[in-house]
Length: 117
Image (cartoon, rainbow, N blue to C red; front, side):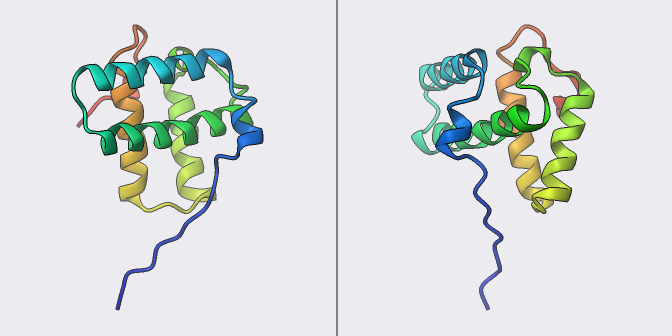
């Protein structure tokens, strides 16, 4: 019996258009960085999609705050939203957080709650 997968679309063009230019530019810079260190195309595409989800959440629930200004509380609120409202599995939540952690590694002001184990 195949496993059941819950799919929910979060990123829509009309929402993506409202995401702050700063965050979009940061994402583009991160994608350039990933290409420069020879990350695979599938990894880059995954990061892009995962971070888009965060940017849309940020738009709708966090005043479209610039990522480098995120606090631990912002990350906790995002994670809570993923678990409670989106009903994502713990593996999916870890993957989404991992994408943010990778992004935070190239920013000056890294939210400390994104650190590894």
